[in-house]
Image 1 (spheres, protein in one colour):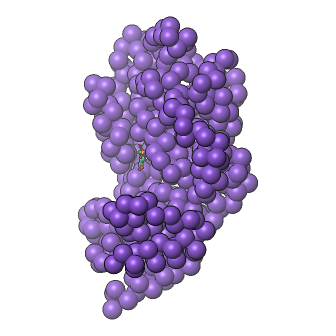
Image 2 (cartoon, protein in one colour):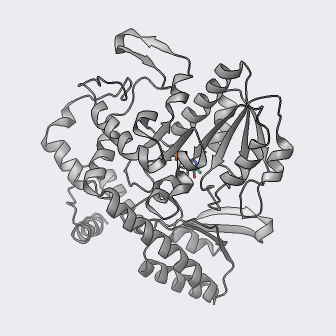
Image 3 (cartoon, helix red, strand yellow):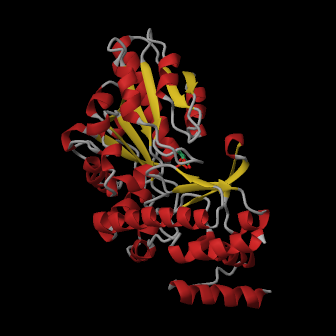
Length: 405
Ligand SMILES: Cc1ncc(COP(=O)(O)O)c(C=O)c1O
C-alpha cells in the first residue's frame, strides 16, 4: 500500500511539477495522496484548482519569512502603515481592486478579509451602523431566500430584523416581492446576491434599486455578496454589474479562495469613505489608530498572496481565465442539452445545475447537491472554474452517458 501511494505521489509530482517530498508521517503522506487524486475532478465547489502559488511559497521559505510571526492588526488604509505587518501590500491590493469594482481611489476603504463571510460580516455590520448613525433607527435587512446562509447567520448574530424576499424559479429576488416586504418607516439594509450559491442567480440590482427609488424618504445601504461572481465579473464585458459607480452599492465582499485561487480562506471587503466615516469609532492607543474593522489580529500572509497573484497573474490573465470559464460554461450546457439531460444556467453565471446523476458520479466529481421541486426534485451542480476545461467536461459527459444506459 505504502509503495503504491509513494508511486502515486511521485507520478502526481511529475505530472504537476511539484516536489513530492515525504513528510516522514505515514498519515500525512497518505492524506496528501488521496487529496491530490481528487483536485482536478473537484467540479461541485467554487475553487480554482489551477492556481499557481508555488513560487510564492519558495520565496517565503527562502526569505526566512516563515520564521516571522506576522500579524495585520490595525488599519492598512492609514497613511502610515505599520512596517511590522504586510499593511503596505494589503493597501496596494485594495487599491488595485478598487477601480475594478468602480470605486475612486480617494473614495474607498477596504481590507483583505478572512473569507467571503468575513466580508459579509463587515458589510452587514457597517450597513447597520451607517443607517443607525444617520437616522437613529435600526434598519430592516432584506435578502433573497436563495442568498447564502452566511447573511442570515450574520443578521441573527447581530440581532437584526431580517425579511427573506421571495426569489423566482431561477433564484433572483423578485422586485414586486421586495416592494410588498418593504417597511418604509425604517431604513433599508439591502443585501444583494451576486451569484447565489446553488443556482448562480444574480439579483437584478437595477430593477430592485428602482423599487427603492420610489421611496426617497427611506435611507438605504446596499451591500453586495459577490463571493464567487465578484471574482470573475470585473474581467468580463459584464463588469458594470459589479461597479459601485453603476450599481450604487456601498460595500462589496468577494472571496479570495474562489476565482483568485488563494489556497486558504481569504477575501476582499471594499466600501465607500462615507460608509467608513459613519461607523462607531474605537480609539486603540496601542495600535495607534481608530479601528473600524471587527477583527483585531488579521492574517498578514493572505494579502501577500493576493499581491503576488496581482504581479504574476494580473489583469490580462484573469481576463483570459474569465473568458475561458464563460466559454466552458456554455459548452457544458450545450453538451448536456445535446443528450437531452435536464439542465439550467443563469445569465452571467458559471454554475450549471441539472438533474442529480447517480451517487457514483456525484462522488467521483464532488458535485454539490440541491433540491427544488420546481425542477423535478433532486439536483446537482457544476461550478465551471479554471480547471474545468472542455476536455474534462467531455470526460464527465461520457461518464454521464454511460451511467444512463
Ligand atoms: C453567495 C455566497 N456568499 C458567501 C459565501 C461564503 O463565502 P466564504 O466561503 O468565502 O466564507 C459563499 C460560499 O460559497 C457563497 O456562495
